[in-house]
Length: 145
Length: 145
Image (cartoon, rainbow over all chains, first blue to last red; front, top):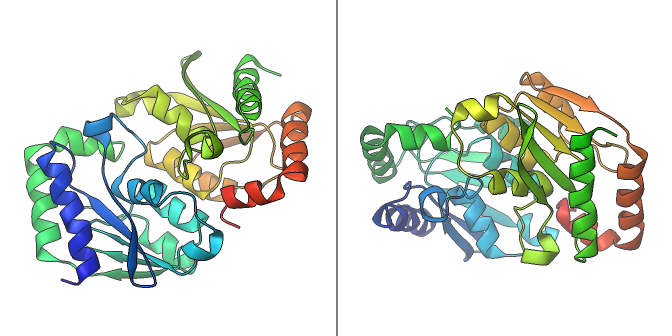
């Protein structure tokens, strides 16, 4: 696993250790991680801070040019909200840990010119599939089901 | 103006009075406002709390069924991120104050079955057009430009 997906997975593991949903993300600019985040539904009672959103929030207010030179790494295929944030800020590339547990809006991202790479990483699949098996109702809440 | 768009506009005015970007939103369930919010880029240094997102966040964690019986009112056409949140949670209807100042992802919303109504309300247009004229850089930052 590359160092950035490893950092995203560390965020997912941190969330799980906190009793939360194990999805993590990092925003990378010119090789440097400028934002790290994880799902905060349980921890903060948040309905908007998915892992990707939390990474963007923790990166803080940035000039448009920074986003346009950045890559977002996320352990799970991004939902409509997170995909929309990627499009809003013009992030040109998303690297996805896996999309077996959940298929997000990858086709929409591609149709808007975003490069999408799916790693199907075993560690990302394992942490998410175990969580969904253990907490199906919490997972469904996170994806509006 | 109906009572719900009036409440959304009140949120926009509150944000403007706080020195922030004047976009407000309310989530309405069976005629009752269950979440109110406004853009928090300036106030909280937030890059994810657009007006719509803040209203959803303030409504708190809700069963999927509640979203599916709700309408989101927002003073300005919702961007890709906010439109994605509407789709994620299956909110079936969005009432938009105006889309002259900014054209969001209305076509995408419609293509996903969301009912979209645009009021072209003069008060919503006035507060937003005045803000964009006075603070173009801040506005551009909010929409990733």
